[in-house]
Length: 143
Image (cartoon, rainbow, N blue to C red; front, side):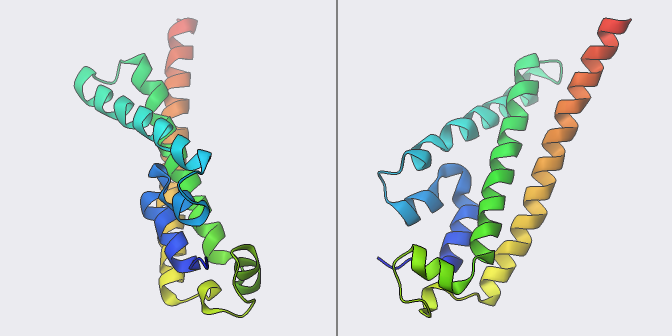
């Protein structure tokens, strides 16, 4: 079945942490599609835990960045999908090389731009949170 590049990019951006883009491209038997919600749920659990327990919860400090890394990875996937050439896309997903499924439209460009912004924010936030906790713990040890 022929797969649309724009739809795949939007699914990776909006539903990537749930594996929706993997199910669209590879079918419901895709293992990675079924595994993606696990770190997403763990990260959300850490976020909820930090909201209720507070910022001194060590488990939340480990779990929250996992969500950011998953979101950043899915945004990177959306960017890769959106920037793939028409010929490569159509060859990979079973269409004629010049078929419309692999065409880049303004919706594709918009998905890539949003994925770049959200993914960079998620990645930098995860790094900032991880390093903040690391250096706070190091300061406690040195005192």
